[in-house]
Length: 213
Image (tube, rainbow, N blue to C red; front, side, top):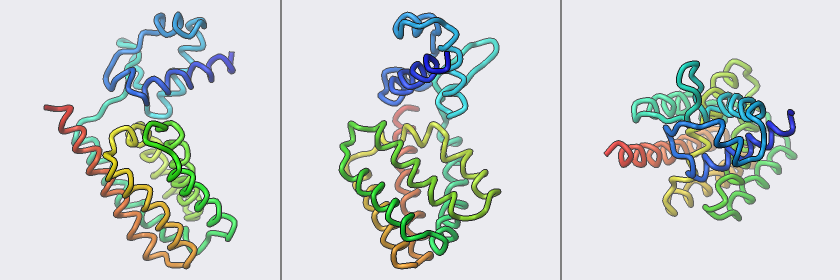
């Protein structure tokens, strides 16, 4: 059952990230069960997993739907990240080992090699990059606060909405953060992370404004 639920979660996640199930859309368990050739039990478990990731919202009376946000909610999410994540990076840089800096560099280069149509792969690599920096900050309270927003579905959907220019800036930021870490310059890394988040926020708010119109 666990394997079936994991496979169902992967399939539903891919549909959401690809936009085949749009933000705010109701998710019909029975339809998904038929499409994926499983019973409704693993579908329910899969939706619970996706709700924990922030991709799906569950309601006792209304069932499941794809998570969506207002412009104000997006601003609040990025306000938290802008206040906390650059600081976390500045704290992480002095604590990174050479091997960890190498791992960050490999992640950044791997993202650069992917195309925008490979959003799933970009998302996973991006989560690992940011997650490693947050974990190395050595502050569990800070990590807990950031995990709640960096694992939100807004982050997972972000790469779908980047223009080519915004995506190029984002990927270049990853490489520059690695350069700052390799140079042992926490202030440099902090400044780049702040620019990185402003780039992401502008992309998401612009896309949301179009959706609201």
